[in-house]
Image (tube, rainbow, N blue to C red):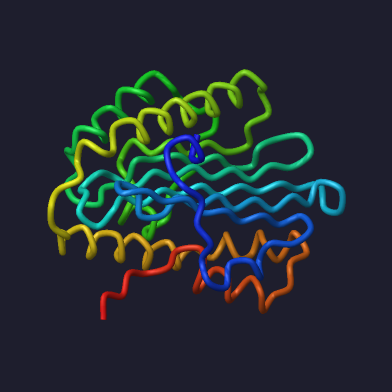
Length: 213
């Protein structure tokens, strides 16, 4: 989907984090500042698999931030998270569309969100834990992929002519709060990735802040 709507870009320093079992790819277009997929596949060595997908709109676009994260073990998805997070206003039309998409989905085990997550995610964030039912997994994947299709199709409608300082502040606020999440780095280390590499990746590459200076 990203290749159909965007062009793949090479970010300085990111290739260092592409190696056996660890893949990072980034796309962009006039309406999408950064679409990042990060997958760590340690199924053979640790029985774990982790994926992070995040799409930031362009700085002159007030669309929300798309996020979808999955952490899976051999027999269950320990965590699945999906949201359209505000980068301008919480009543954005695309967020209302997201609300409609998750209205009838109730996880069998709802994950409680810490303060840093409540700061940036919507009240209807999909947060499922301990998912063992294949039909529930299928439903989560369907919601997230359908919403990505809608996101990439609709985001261009909200691109304006000038950079919006509110969007910059909101995207940086999102990045700052994501970096307060200790679980991402801990899971990556548990997958066997070197501690120093994980710390640098989470600090500089996973949620890079916008610096216009």
